[in-house]
Image: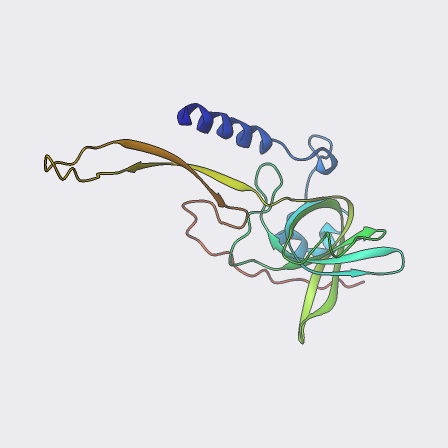
Length: 200
């Protein structure tokens, strides 16, 4: 029974993670500028399409648009950021209209697609920072996911009458959060990217 249930949950999990959400998809063959390219070659890459994601660090609603400061993380094949303890940098995403900070909370994972619009100066705390910027045409707020582990547990209760240990076999399903973990086997730490200021 548990084996069938675990296989069913695995199929659901894999099928849910197989494709990029529809609103983030771009025409097949569309060249995408990477965060690293945008940060180091801002003048040459301005105006190109991009799909970036990460964790919200700050959100600010302005009169006609919302600015999100995002800690950048690379994306899985389905477009979800692979968040962890280290990042190569931050970016700003500009989204038209109002976005409720109680929904788009600091710490939530998001992915954006749109046009790279250059870099701009700003602050992280009191530290001067140069942000690659994205004019987002679409975005996706990710829900926290749960990873299903099927774990075998052996129990050996002592039989006081016969002096031996019967060995019933139990199998349990344990749920743990896995929305912010690096993939298994990841050993290298991402390196910060030097951001090139635009001459404009």
